[in-house]
Length: 340
Ligand SMILES: NC(=[NH2+])NCCC[C@H](N)C(=O)O
View 1 (cartoon, rainbow, N blue to C red):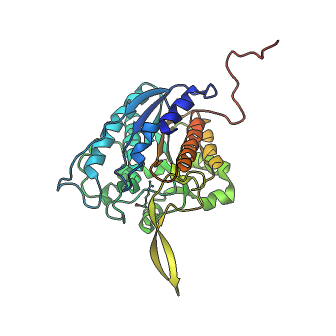
View 2 (view 1 turned 90 degrees about the vertical axis):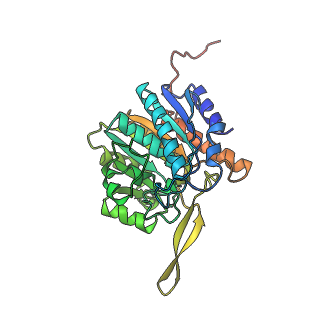
View 3 (view 1 turned 180 degrees about the vertical axis):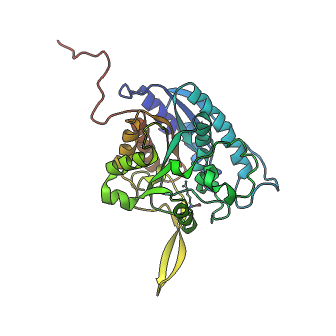
């Protein structure tokens, strides 16, 4: 069962209390370089299924910025996704966007911001995705999503043609990261300059996931009135829980006598347990203000059949928590205990 199965499965569960959900597939993988993330939505919940977004196939034009791979396809696709996400929000449903890679969050968060300026983004990810085209080593746009959306970083970009629709930008005060474990040095510089609030894996080790989530929500929404957007990258989970995902990253390795160099690594070890991942969504669901969830970077082209089904199952558990499933059970409506 893939992500399509995920949606159907969650929709059928009588123990899922939040029934007003709109699901949308964004089978887009050009924000990175592997084939696969685009396969996830085909295999994926229906509560109200708004279908798949049209994927744009625009060719490179010289006016596109340098070091942004597949820019034309990405600007075309995120605009299509944004209009569907707005439609679902207007229908007063919680939006579940099934990626695709993490560049699709430009469309989903962009649309959420158009619908409601007062949003708080909880970015659950191994990566910060806050590179600009001038800091990115890979040129992959999935590593630049937060920077494209960020108000404070506007002057750090060249012209971004096709992104003019993004009028309400996200303030870096309205985002909080949970689960970081692979940050590029210049991303770290950006985060530090703008005081971006982030909890890395070491913070979770120190304080435990429950306290981290409560602190994160208190930081990003002290007045308890914002509309929450959870952008959940499945690679936040440990590779043992979610093997079918993959991003190459650079890790500093020490060579000798304090000399370091960058080594290319595929998905970083030491991520969240599935229980920690579920806890994040349970706590945010509990606020009653979870309006949108992205589930991204599930790549059915990576790993064995078992790896794929394990990763899809992890995604199902995360989405069920986002829809209000309570692990210790939900009381059924209008039910009586049968007597003989
Ligand atoms: N959503 C992701 N998996 N992002 C990975 C980004 C990796 C790296 N920081 C880059 O910019 O290329």
